Image (cartoon, rainbow, N blue to C red; front, side):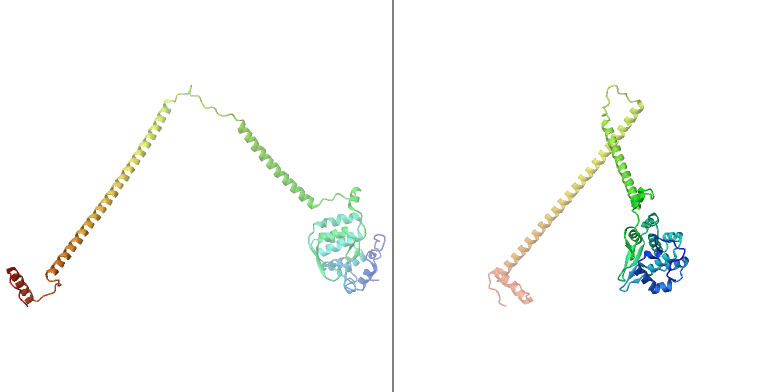
Length: 344
């Protein structure tokens, strides 16, 4: 009794809603622990709380084919068959992404082709990440828009065979659906408009520059004003011109005076330098003459000393005693008189 569909449930696709899931998978769900403990006697209100507690999506996994909680809640929704407004609220829920994923899969199984395109295509703008359990028990990441694309295009999602739906172009030709406008088309249109505006600005700038150049080329050359018939200047202008000439002549004379003064100062400076140089040179010459005279005097003294040594028998001068000096003086006197010298 716990696994039967409610009495007032409507048949979907001409069959019992629970039969949209294969019998083997459905039997595994009935036997799993999550179905018996968590999904027993669930209502549409309590189902929302269970859906908010989902952590990942998935079908069956493992060697003994265990169903994921996501698949168990999907079967429970097929069993109690909640109203369409509740499923639409599941899809529009932006706070809980796994609640949205559960409502999208249920809408894909039970809804018409028009409902699938109408409610699922806006979810292409949802780029949140989802965690999905694979058949070997490991997990992988995908985005919400990828999951919605799989629901619309693929034949099998979460180990459930999806019913066929009509192609979108068929529904558009039948005027049952409006032409889909992608968000990327809007971005491309904005980019194209921006590029067109930039091109127009460049074209306007180039055309204005070209007009300016043509205007300058077309302008006639200015002819020199004729000298004849020239209007004589007024007295006021004459006085003003004279004043300008005088001021200019004064400026020139002042400049000339300054330059002459500067030249005189430079000449005076050069003369002083030459005098100093000559005086220093003459002083050096005088010094050199003095040194030469001094050297000559020294040589003469040395020559005299040599002669003196020769006169004294070539003996050098030694300090003599008083008696010896007296004997020497006497000998000199005796030599002048022609007498023999005294012996000491």
